[in-house]
Length: 93
Image 1 (cartoon, rainbow, N blue to C red):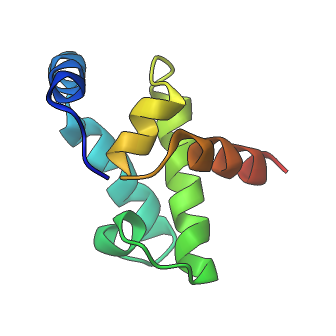
Image 2 (cartoon, rainbow, N blue to C red):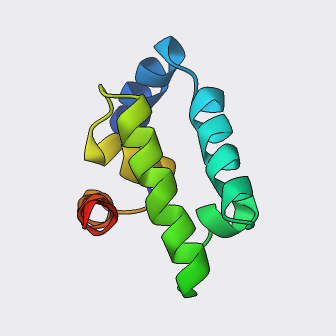
Image 3 (cartoon, rainbow, N blue to C red):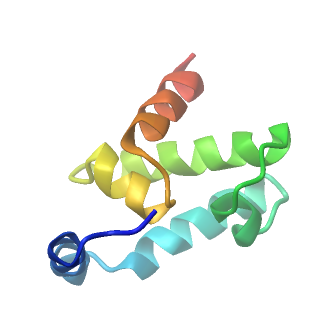
């Protein structure tokens, strides 16, 4: 997924206030709890244990950073915002 330059400016200005490193720390914590690597969580694997960890990480980001929209979380994971919405519904169920 490629971002337009104007979208990248918005993303970088948004994450200047709340750094990407904080979100990556949350992802690392969730990955460790699910016994997978951060690269697996951020990757494209569709194996169930990895995708469940990815869904949990998306939910943890949404819970910890309330101001993040599904679009912003999707960009963090290189996914579409509808994937984030689906993950949040699956974790809640």
